[in-house]
Image (cartoon, rainbow, N blue to C red; front, side, top):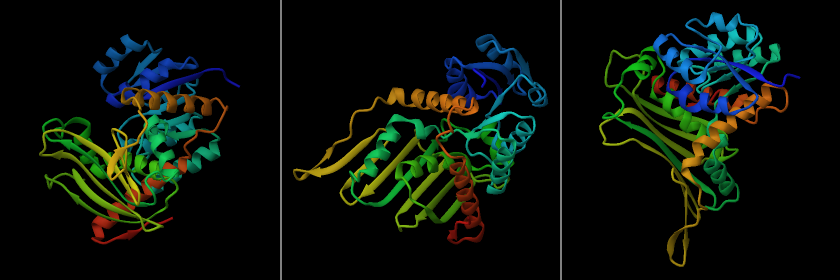
Length: 337
């Protein structure tokens, strides 16, 4: 069994630099072997900081390097599918950002090929490793707020801070809109916190300010679960508001749970009391990123399965497929298996 994992990073933008590279470097069993990106200036700056063995601008040079054991794919979503399949063909383990693919058909192809190749495919479900989201899930399992009535969540980015340029504009042009890009992360958080609830149907609406764009810059959706509880979502890249907003609110028969920051409000002594344990917000992101990195390394080295089943990533793509079908047909859509 190998004692170390040689990794190639494919796509060296902000996500790779904040959520992956620092934590790969902190794992003593990881060797950062190569960087791949089309931006040579970015590659040069990262080479000085991380000292990889090679920097390349074409993915084929990563694939043909037999010393590279695994790839971390943080390229735009529409490239995840062909890159992951190619990496598996060349015998490499794959760690990929969510959404794993643009649709469920592509996700199933990756999962099937990973099983045939006997290689690990894992997706970046970092919220499953966050101390505050883990705690909130445990509190929900203990029914601290009673039985779930409904939940709502949103990720609203201010037009003042997030102009549609660069990667965001590229995503819209290539068909990955706000629901797929922002909504997938929200769905991952909500489904993890809410536990074993099974999404049954979705009703969605999408909006785009520029009719020339292929995909939406804002969206709203309602997801109905098998137990008839409901999750309401709103996402936008370009709202006219002064600041970004990210939230998850869960309402139960005995109280409410709020995320970011974590609060548990229950009625006690004729008033609402926040009974949530204290969690350091500063440590949540580093803990989650390091946790998922360590878990992938252990899985690729054959020590333990990755703790988040790849079927969780497939479910997110299935929900996205149903959302866009709902938008097109202007009706509630039942999720397909």
